[in-house]
Image (tube, rainbow, N blue to C red; front, side, top):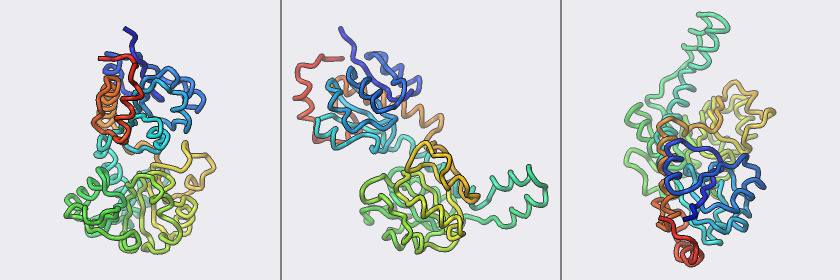
Length: 331
């Protein structure tokens, strides 16, 4: 019997490939250019997504049983088009929450204890200069963090801050009455005014785009620090750079950018009080294994015409079954 084809936009872990190969041919796109993905998707029965899909991909990928996001955020998938074409979409919520939450905590410690600067100074200057930096470091205990977006990641960040470091935790999301007991729900402006640290853990939506802008930066405490593990467009990058440059903000750690890879002339690269990483806050050996296995299992369910566990656009299922009537049956 003909085997289905699974398209990987990017390589995934060995464990996931082995699961997929039990019932499908696995093809990895040679690059993630829009036309390359369109061409590869024409013969695909499922797509495992780690790169931006072209808006029109579902017009050419007529064999699809479904799409699985190899992470949580859905901004790499044209969701309106998927729903319009009755293409089921699944994602992997919570699978890297621990990794990202630990990244946020390492970022807070980095900014308060200044270990990266102390290490650099000890290597490039001398002992006394490095020790002097230690005298200007600070503790986390008793400070206030504002968590924007209290999903799996944000709630875990708040839990660690509260239970592990005795930090006061503010939370902001659409439903302020559905927050953990250790977190005080506040509106976004109150959060900006009261927080010493702000952790941006929200998805990118129309409501969160440009959420941190010049007006909200003006509300923040002088010297406040930010961590962005959300998406680049949730804050105004140029306004953040300006506020860090003139000392209005004390520091920032950023893992995500409006344009990725980060262009080499970006003003963030010139800031000494900003630490930059390459969209890898959720990348650990443990999380990648969970992602690889879990996302592959979701693909297998879709190929077998079973509902995925983490079904995003559930409303398409009946239309999907009608659409694939007459397609080969895979078991």
